[in-house]
Length: 317
Figure 1: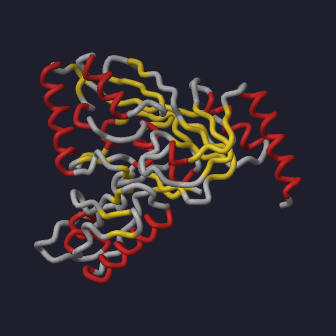
Figure 2: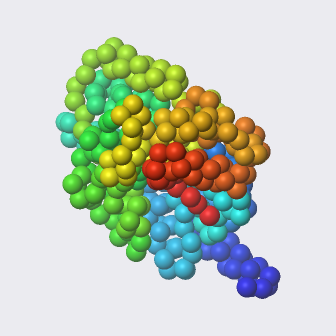
């Protein structure tokens, strides 16, 4: 495509966005500002949502105008390419939380998991307190079926609101979400998460706060929370991925550590000394650096244990 065509497309999109969202869409925004890895190129266009229907409207205009659309929550669990992201990036920033019946809470997809945990604890509602310290948003946690110490978030989910690639909104029951370890139906259908409902019950405020503090303390001890990272890079191996020696934990972090990779570096990307399944950006790491280190870890574990680690990270751009 020539430079004149690109300019015309930019002008057309600018008019479209101004008509649809006012002046809330920005052009040429560095993805380093939007992701916990602090790396990646530039987004052609960025809309930070302020209303609950922004996502539905964005999906519909993307379909109508054949515009690439990328939905981003808290910016964790993703690696954005150095070439950036084409089309419109939607950063979910809106977030209402409400009671939905006696034993259910509904949170919109842009709500942070930590914000949801705080909201429930403040109201003496039990069920989500162990998720204190979970990075990212509700939408992202549903997309990847977040897990912690053997628990799956899907165990707390009762229903999910979705918008499909045509902009049609539906409410889906928990069984229809196709949840499994690190997986949900939205990874395969192209649907986007609008909201999720979670099962709660009455709880003692002091006990809920204590449980949340224990979960957060565990994360601080075992994860490099103060560093620029995206969270876990690989899924933990499944039984069908291959046998392991009896003294080796079925954990991606343990396999990486036993392969001698803690502290391994490519550029400014380093395998964390705290947790082997975290790669940290020490400042100025490129997506290429991080990707090379990921593949180095995958190859080393495969060579040592015969296990090919699966990605937990999502690659954008």
